[in-house]
Amino acid sequence: MKANTTEQSVNLYNPKENKVYFRLSIYLPNGKKVWQSEMIKPGKAIYKLKLNRTLAAGTYENCTLRYDCYAMSKQLVQLNGSQMNFTLKVVE
Image (cartoon, rainbow, N blue to C red; front, side, top):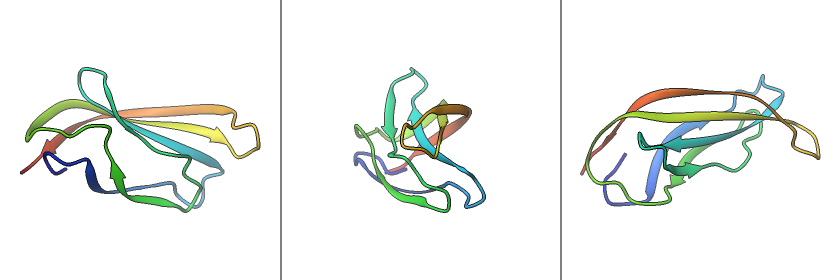
């Protein structure tokens, strides 16, 4: 990601084969959420996002990308989810 700006380019998607909505979130190592998506329909993607805050240049180890899955119904029933740890590199 780019330092000192909230606007970021990404490639996060919900495969068209899925029968659920995704809501994605990014957390820093201290547990602070810096971004959360709207519901992502199957076959749709996010290519640009806006962080809740800017990040200084550096390497952030043990960040978390969290996937929450929701039934495709009017009531948005939360289903399973997953999360993965990753190293976030923020550059000037």
